Length: 138
Image (cartoon, rainbow, N blue to C red; front, side, top):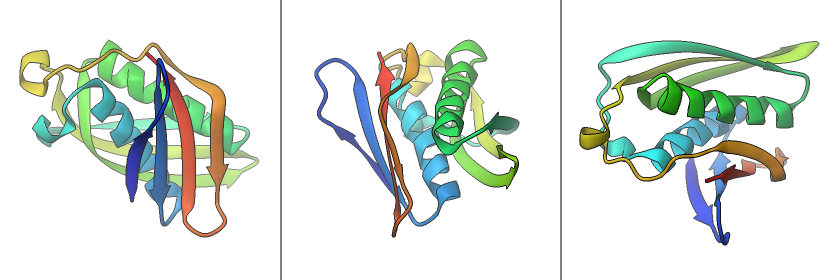
């Protein structure tokens, strides 16, 4: 499970590769946090639980990315470890346990603020390893 930054002129364009959908969403969460701050500086001192719902996988990814931005920037919680489960019963439900600590811009080395995720260029491929691509508006 890895992620990398792809070329884009103004925004963060990220590609995630993982062996399962859950691991891909975990990695996408890490990529969002690591775009905002230095995720390696975040200790696992407390935990937050999060639920995200959507009718399809693209909307689920969008909602997940949006919640990760809100959790970090608005709520002031820096996550560094993610445990995600995804179920589908009519709609998708993502449940996450996120370990980390309260945000400290000095300790966590703030990089850039993300305005929002976008649907532009979003892809989710599940044939073989899961590959997701998404764009974050900076």
